[in-house]
Image (cartoon, rainbow, N blue to C red):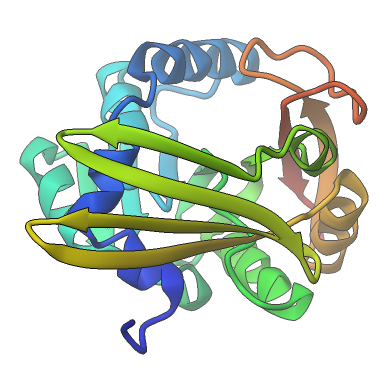
Length: 246
């Protein structure tokens, strides 16, 4: 194992993209369309996609006519996303803990459970404070996270998945306020092991962290169809928050 943090190592691996190649792009685009119809941002709005991966959401938002910046820690992902860059779409390698924007964006997006990778609430708040600084006075933040209650209740401890000729053995378990996913596989005679570790953050946790970092929670949805959040049944926890006025 590398000394890199798990997300820096795993997300910059080609195997990460193999394992998650079946992500539903149509669903992602429909979610973005519904969200933009709800928010009705100006066509001059500046949008930042935080932890953008290879840019699937950012590219689609740009096609809808918005100016979009995508940032991600993975150089490999940003290199792939740069294929789509234009004068209204750009990508940068950045660590969410070290954002250096100042009142640059009208809307910040953090999609597909790209939060809670760190080891403490304090670092989560640090990330949120950086996003707060990056937003304009009336800026909005949307966080798309899993609903930890339903994830824990439906957790499948062990499974295997074969993709592109590679069989991934996946084990999941809750541990110390986080959900761990151990990923093992063999490719070209070499054995590999990666681990995902995401904090099991609840609605209450997010409300506390957002308040602490200068945000007000406005709305919570439980799925990509923008149905209301139900802690006992929803698959997702999708939070819309506004930058508080000073």
